[in-house]
Length: 410
Image (cartoon, rainbow, N blue to C red; front, side, top):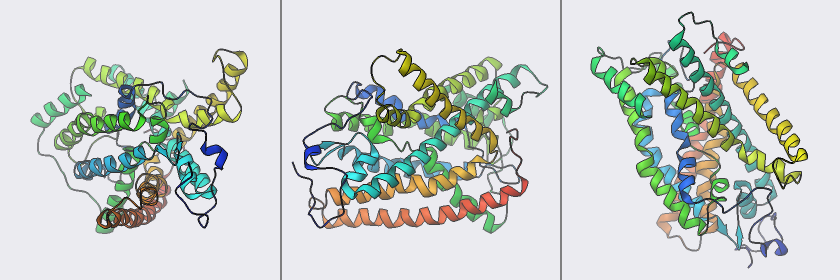
């Protein structure tokens, strides 16, 4: 089958011979999981609701809280649409696209392949830094529950959902009047709000849907759509619960790690922190899997994972990746600003701009005028959001750099 493109278009990253191969070469297994496991993967970003990603202004108030509630409602619907578009393009042009960069390269050409891979790598790397920080916050919270000397600092930890919802509701009932206003000047509020939008987009998107879909059993599109519909109906309930109840209970002034703001039995807070830590361990490796797959495929690492060559290669490569991630996580105390920048220059383009435009190109002969107009509106609107979010993030980085201390305790 030939690709739906004429000869006058941009150069491709595939040939006629490649189109005869339904699945590209990879060192990892594909089509071996049911959509049930994919539901778990799609739900992983909900872990971030326990952490506010260190997005705090000079007054110590989280600027994400106020906008999280309305953003989650609108973002869930829009994200479902974009994920659905990418899921439906998983089998396109006679080929199965198991990587996001493969799909971009197939549609646009080699330059788009390289650019998408670079943006995706940065996005996933920053996500893993966030999980490292969350893991450290979880361990520190456990330590503080049993020791009150506060000697264990977060960088030291790098070296050596329903429970929180109930506790937040209890605190909200018993707490006095809360402050829901955003402190600061008008200009500061505007830039903080824009930066928070980019940060929220970053926090609640995976950036690796084709890689997740690659492991789904056939029919891959149908099963992935089931997973997406489940995730954006039942799966978002815990996220909404923590969002609305947490904001109602604590207002705009709260800890960057939500569990630190809660009051309740030590055993409940301990179990919640342990669960948070264990989930970060799983999530970190899942979001590192595209890099693992690239390295294993590039260097032909196949066969038994316990073979000496495979074991030593993976230990050095993956261990080095995790060590670098951990070092950067401990180095930057205001990482939330860099995550806002990542959301602006990477997540917005990958999740909204590219997804809409790829669907336009792939389905241009099957879309109505109204559908085409809607997709073009999304491309333009989120392109504008990407631009202003980048400016806001750079401003926040410049402001917070004045009080920057490497390896600071969070």
